[in-house]
Amino acid sequence: MYDYELHQVNAAELIRRADAQRTVRQAVLARRAARRSGREDPEGRVSTDQDRFAHAA
Image (cartoon, rainbow, N blue to C red; front, side):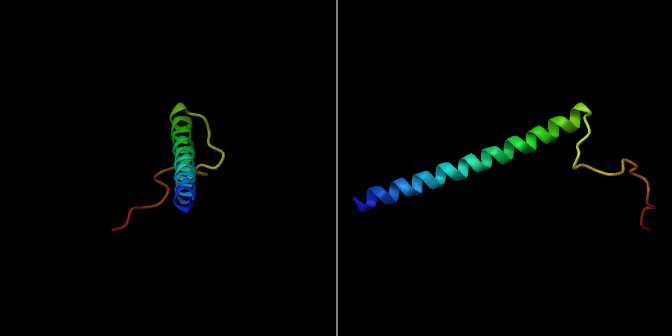
């Protein structure tokens, strides 16, 4: 009986981890899609000027 309960706990933990990874992956894909569509990301870059600083020698 103890082995079965241990298996259930491990299975539940694996399912929880997979769900968390899926959520993170969906968030990353949503941010990429928002960036590609041209919408402004409220937590994105402040400045869009890429050549503001001189390149190092």
